[in-house]
Image 1 (tube, rainbow, N blue to C red):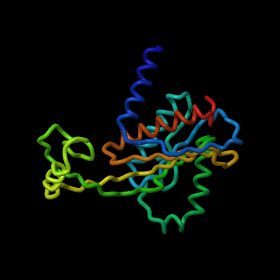
Image 2 (image 1 turned 180 degrees about the vertical axis):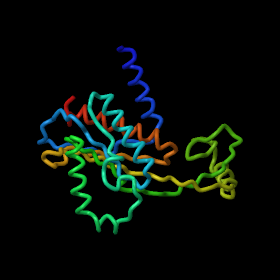
Image 3 (image 1 turned 90 degrees about the vertical axis):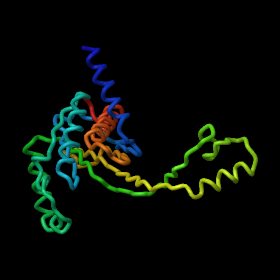
Amino acid sequence: MKKFSYLILALSCLLASCASTKLINSWTDKENTPQQYKNIGVTALFPNSSNRYVTEHAIVDQLKEKGLNGMSTVDVFPMATQAINSEEIMKHSEAVRKSVVTKVKENNIDALMIVTLFDMTKEQRWVNDRNFSVGGTGYYGSPFGLHGSYYDYYAYSLGTVYNSGYYVDNISYYIECNLYDVESEQLIYRAQTKSTNIKSVEEEAKALAYIVAKQLVNKKVVEK
């Protein structure tokens, strides 16, 4: 049984290391007394309903791995799977608030984690198609490294000026996870992560889930 547990832990670490998602900031309420929550609700508010589903279930799975009870709310909360705009939200904001409170009570949720995309950045990076014929790259991309004369470096650099290249886009997504104690309605934990050039939503969701669940236990935000 221990070997199986170690295998699960190793696989989780491997999945987390393969993804680009990294923790960039976290906060815990120092005055919060850790509790053993019976049901941690997880809701991911993303424009894409499939991403919501994947993220919520990944976090719930990791919570269970840590001995914590949790549930996905994608099929429970109002407008969770609907494509709506900000005007529609503002129009029905009070009704949404009341409905969320009702659903929380109906499902015996005593802690609620809300996952959101709070920022996205895009930058371009130039990649030069330099083909080296002498020993590979060295100091500042020169094949001469720290050796060679000024005329060697001049001739080499002049030859690379006209080389073709291309731009690549680096897109970074910043995710925020807020955990609220339902009874006090207070924020007790916050984590912010960064994911760059996402290739697999599933793998990034698993990495996010691993980070958050691990922090909840290690920082004693909740008790098992």
